[in-house]
Image (cartoon, rainbow, N blue to C red; front, side, top):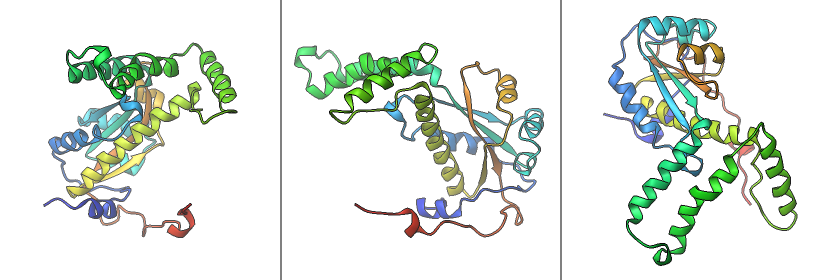
Length: 241
């Protein structure tokens, strides 16, 4: 029986040592299917997930993850990849989906919301994501900040800003995966410490792809959780206006 959402969140810990117990790869796949249901900026879904299941590949990843126990003892690994470079393809997929939903409705008979949605992917997304050596991003940043003197505007338009946006979306998907694993009584450990360049080469990813995190998967050893959970008091991080 699966845990409730709250139970899964409370159960999830960063497990550093896993048992020598095989994990059904199909469970990993099912949990990754939940990953793609995570929210993403503009619904572009600029992510990919590589399931590292072969013993040969897992052994190589131990080295890439600097010999961390979470990689060394994991029965399976998942690599969360950011694919900001696929924004054109994913934007086009959204646009085609909307066209199917709206059917044969003529533009003049569409609602204001429908026309906005189509123009969002036809015009707005390209105007934000189009880039040339980072120059266009700085020009957008300058323009938007000038406009921002007179009204609220979106300001995260530089190349570095858009990278952050894509990584945030990928991290949300990773959290979906880890909570789904916890709901089934399995454990995970997200690892940021890795040689991302070697990982990209090993997985034959394009230069423009970026590694968000590597997640070790398995069943926790009793000693696998390093101490009780510590969190800053809720009162320190919560406010209301």
